[in-house]
Image 1: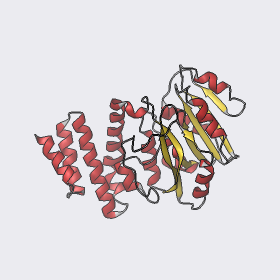
Image 2: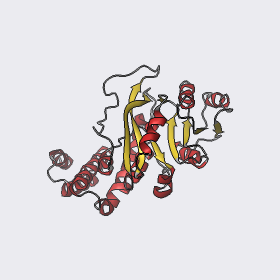
Image 3: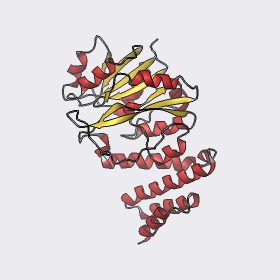
Image 4: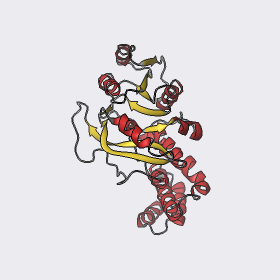
Length: 295
């Protein structure tokens, strides 16, 4: 049995797909299996995948099932103890998996290992600065459940996780559009610690058609996660880590208020802001937003 199962998801990224596949095939860790699933692309991606069928397992969908249904299918088709995800527009550096496995095997409580990342444009050129506009944790390892309540910390293609995490925490939620990865990382972080390779071994490609730009569908995902995975589970979450967890819950509930504000549901927004202040009463930004929701 291989050590790592690579699940490569493909959808209308024909121009980037060969580079993604070659980066998986070029890993210095040789003990891997690769399954590539095309989710009914219309741009020639299936033809590209067929050219690699002698080296990787290829599955072609006739109808589009969505990102997370495709990932669940890929995981079910593989059997290695470690699972890595590669989006078809991203790229790995050659020693990514080897360094992640070394960190994973350094401690049995580590359930997920991610790497640093760089951002590239459509042509593969590095993009400097912070083009994603996201704050990332300065030391993203250890017990990160509280930090993950406030935002996603990992680029999906940078993650390696244990198969037992899926068996214990459940699969990807297939109804979600673009935040199903964050949802799974939250569940994993309740039971496992997080490992980190502090090198940019994953290249995230920013090209204007990324899922993050689908604002309405991402907002719906954001609402579901904040309500179902955070707000409804506050009693369970409070069993972890005292004040740090209370503060994170407060920040997450304030974010829920912002979501409702964006949806012009002011009563719901005020309710979320008030609940937030019960857990993190000294956060000035939440008081300001509460006042704004009343005006």
